[in-house]
Length: 119
Image (cartoon, rainbow, N blue to C red; front, side):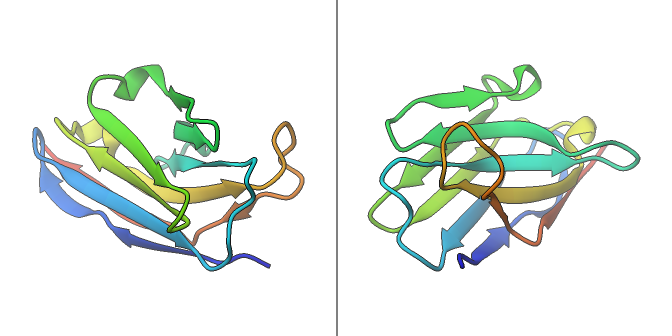
């Protein structure tokens, strides 16, 4: 069983930066996906960014050019640098570890970190 420990986030004014980090308690699979989802108030959880073990990254259109995901396979960590934050980026951000590519059946989730962007 993997546990994901998240850190970072908090409160920032619009235009400012924040960083999220997530560390897995186990050695992640050599073929896996790690990333971040967020849940805004009253909305469903949605993709923010993911990074595969092969090096490919994927971003939600709304964060392209502002957010950067990075993954360290040796340290079993994934981070999200968020720049030029907007009030609509507010929500709870969840770290994802998907050890089986192509299926969400074995997904692990962190407990979530609050990100609040004030206007």
